[in-house]
Image: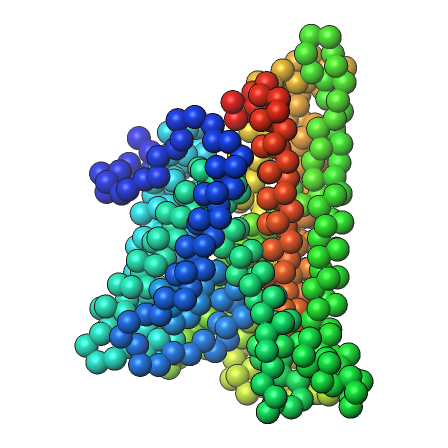
Length: 472
């Protein structure tokens, strides 16, 4: 009996997006993907009924990564979906829950429990957003506001299922990429209020107009206005280059021993560790706000953690404009990390701590993700064996393939997860449009989407290849 069998009567009643009976052609997949993205943008512009005020504070920069928009029905975005996944991963990774995700029954049990938990978390996070003041409901409208926000997140949950089964890629990735792309376009080309002067890094809007206005009067300001665009391009090229790095494992296929290579990418876990880490950091910030001033010891700990995991966005631009400043924000002095900041450079030390914490968390989630996603050495070895592949010079045995993969996959998982963690952390400091982490995720998502489309097109032209990829 599985660990979550007791909840089966509940999650089995939840609506489910039925998988297509026949393989969908690529045009239909693109159509479903476009429809889901359009609905996401529409939901982001539907304001919650019954609120009198709203604020985003330090969650503003995380809205893009969480595919959320405070004040709309997708205020909590994909946060509940990702948090539910994090909780179950920790339970399984810590051995508290015994599930073999390579077993279809256990995997179905995990999926059902994840959906149920995501729905529960949707209502919980909606309540937390209201209780902490991110949304201020009008008198007597508390339940209505919570219900709207929770339903918005649940709709995103099912849109994610639609994209996964009928579209291309994943809904979570699609919503993040769509939100970041929208922010980039608006951040560069949005109209600039002619009454404003100087450069504001709070929202990064109208950078092209800022540059054109400042180039004739202040070259330094004009250059700094272009920094987010330059950093965005730099992150793009670094990620694209990293996506092309891989290790080729020699492999043989068929009775005649046709030679080939099995590539193991440097970014083997893609950008999922960063998505999970940022979602965790956002929840830490929300919890810190919720318990502020209620439990002194816990409040101090949570405030310290929240201080570290919210990076000093745009630090590079601020240094370029104002030079190094040793001033220390008051919230740092009031946190458990306050002593570490005194006299050590304030925001610079904060940035270093943030990058270290983000990198460690990414590595942890990366290790969990390869097992959860069936990308571990054992699962990959079994897939290659079923496809008739084996290591040249050895007898055909999945255990032999696993021994070879064990030399590469665990190490590459750690290195790839650490790389995306460090790159995301550094990118956040540059003030890149849509947040550095958002740019990193979007480039990775679009690159994977391109690969998925290319693979689907090849398999439509050569249906027999579907059997090799297990999608026939």
